[in-house]
Length: 361
Image 1: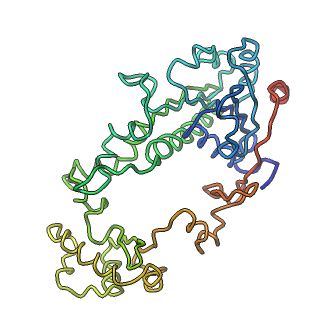
Image 2 (image 1 turned 90 degrees about the horizontal axis):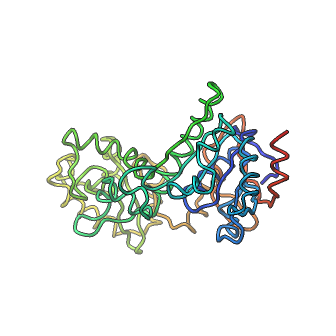
Image 3 (image 1 turned 45 degrees about the vertical axis):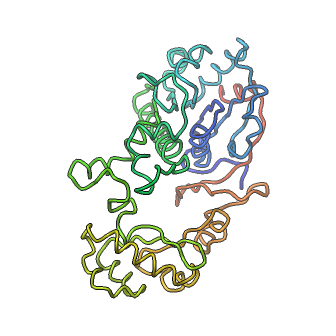
């Protein structure tokens, strides 16, 4: 952990309006990569105590109902490269901080807007959460057991994958464009848009007739006997992804799958029965016993670990994938840069006037 900014974004200035979920995650990624992120917390808000999600930022308490505070925020934004906000459409405009006002003060600013439904459309002003945003995209309907309800993939697909990561990409692209052209712009990052984009390969499969809408009927949704998770003798789970013929052959060798029915790997009519047979095989040994047989081979195998187990995993430990900050173990910055490595910085309090003065130099 370091107090000084490192990483490829050193010198980039970001103003983050405090929120939950994807906005803070996006700002945290930019901060890990070296950006100077100033987080504006509303005085007395529930976000003020969220020091974990605010890592790497300077946090400023500000009363956005105070006209003088709004003027100071506008002065701060004059020295910024980008802004991140995650309010419903129209909120920033009512505060006097909408794109027209801000871009008039700083034409090079990249104005990042993070919402679930987007800035326009019939649902734009409706409340929602990750599970709702991915429900209309085809993503949620494709995940889960065939004979059960769709399985919520935590909030990874909407909030973080389709939201935060697309916002980060949009902000970085916007900064590159602004530095080349002198013109900033608004980045409308909607989680429903991002989730649809993440589904691109599956929409392509469907268009070609290679994807069925019934869950657990396809190559990558648990339908194939050689791609999925299986329970072990001790009630834990392992995963296999032996798609390629050579990896599938190794799976058969390691698991003792000698039945001739396994010869027709891609015969989908046999997948349900073969899945039952493989499930029975994996239940004959504990997870640790299967690790000893398959881990590190080309079977495409891994144990299914809990979060606490993941922190103790030998591979992740060797890569220092987790770091400890103020006694809390948490994910390290990703991705990694060879020449300008990222680092984790502590949260620190700051005064708005001080930051304005610093950025105006």
